[in-house]
Amino acid sequence: MAEEIEKILKKILGICGSPRKNRSCDFLVEEALKGAKETDETIEIEKIYLVDYKLEQCTGCDQCLREPYECPLSENDDFKKLEEKILSADAIFIAAPCYFGSVSGLTKVFIDRSRPWKMANYKLKDIIFAPMGASGLRNGGAAGVVSDLINFAFIQGMVCFGALGNPVIDENIPMTSLQKYGRKEFIKKGEIDEIGQRVAKNIGVRAVNLLLKMKNK
Image (tube, rainbow, N blue to C red; front, side, top):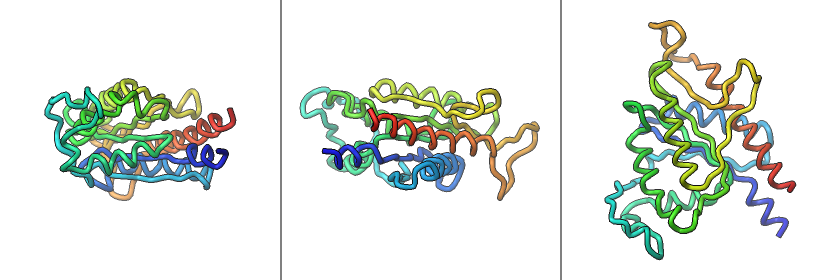
């Protein structure tokens, strides 16, 4: 039993919700996972890209409302493969880009298709969750992305948390932008958003500390 508990509290999953790899969402997830690994090198971490999974759009058939609480679309796409990754995690980070004030269509399809997990008596309940958002402009809608992701997590019964850093100058939610603080200044190749990096790392650190606290109770 002790070995089982040890395993249960050791998995952090980072999810990139952008159709584009190696960009802003990837940056946030990577930094968060680095923060987790630097805090406890024994922690199991994994990063996945939603774009690597074939996910059909929800058709509103409502079959997931009834036993066995499964989506018929899962017979012909990769939802079950994704489900296996999701349900094996104890902490989940999702970074999504801002597309016209909301999450990307790819991320929204994932959220819509997650409905069976709620219907099957909250399969994601008590998994700790951190949202992360990316936008092109500094005030370009990343906060709306974060709001959508928090809403997803609350509906699923997950436990949302934010980063802890300097209480005066550090943010609590990782958000990054291609725009610097000058109106026409943008991050160039090889440069990074240092604030986004710091907050993302702090998310990873706090995730590990929360899992350890849960383990010790």
